[in-house]
Image (cartoon, rainbow, N blue to C red):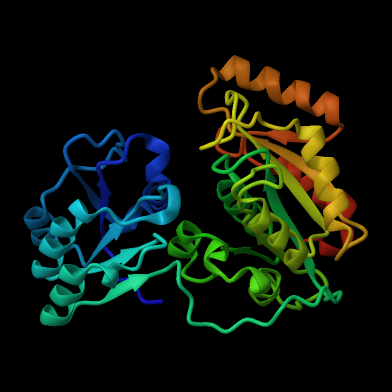
Length: 340
C-alpha cells in the first residue's frame, strides 16, 4: 500500500461524528500527516482541523485525499464523486477505506486515468489467503473484543502497543480494519475477506513469532452483534489469542445500527472464552477498556473502579487514564514476555 502524506480528510456529509471514525483515527494517531478537512453541506462531523477547499489543500501541498468515512455497507455516494474528481484534477491521489471501490464510479476512474493519479482502496487486499488451520504457533497474542462495534478496540490495541514499546516490550499492533491499515501501513481489512478465509487471513497477519513477542490484534464487531458476529468469530479463531481485553461504551442502550441491547461485559467474557478455546484452550481476559468520552471525569473514575471490583480485572479508559494497569496484569500472567 502506498498512500502519500500529507492528507486532506474528506468527510462528505456524514450524519454524526462516529461515521467519520476512519478520519478521526488517522488524526488521533498520525496528526502530523493531516493538513485539513473538507466537508460537504450538512456534514455533522468535525475533526477540529482547518476547513479547506480542494484548491486550498492543493496549494498547501496535500498529496492524498482520504475518504475518511465508515458508513453502513461501505458505500460511496454518487454525489461525492464531483469532489473526488476535483481533487484528482488538482493533482491529488485518492485513498478510501470503503467497501465500494473508487474506480467503480466511472467519473473517478476516468479522471484518475486522465491525470495519472493513484486510487487506493485499502479495504481490498491483493493477498491470497489460505483457510485457517488453528495450529498452535509460537509468540503471544492479545485480541481486543467488544460489547459492540465502534467502542474502542483499535484505540485500545494502539494504546497497548505504545505503552508496551515505551517499556521495552517486543510488541506490534496488527491492523484488521481500514483505519488501522491507514495508521500502521500494513494489515488486512478482515470484513472484506471472503468468509472461508477470515481465520486464515488473521493467521497471516499475526504469524509465528518469538516466544516473548506480543501481537496486539485489532478486534472487529462483536460476537453479539447480529450484523458482524461472523467476522468477529473468524477473527477470534484466527487470532488464537492468549488473552483479550473487553472494550465497552457504557452510555449505549442498543448496538450500533440495530435494535438489540448491548450484552453485559460478563456475557462477552464468557462467550469469547467459550468460542476462543477452539484454537487456544488457555485464552483468558486481562482487562476492560471503557470508552468514557460521554462521561465526566468523576463518573469515569467511579465506573472503572466499579468494573474492576465486579470483574477482578484492571479497567481503564486508554485515552483518559492510560493502559499501564492492563500491561502490568499481562506481565504478571506472562512473565516470559518481560521487556529487555
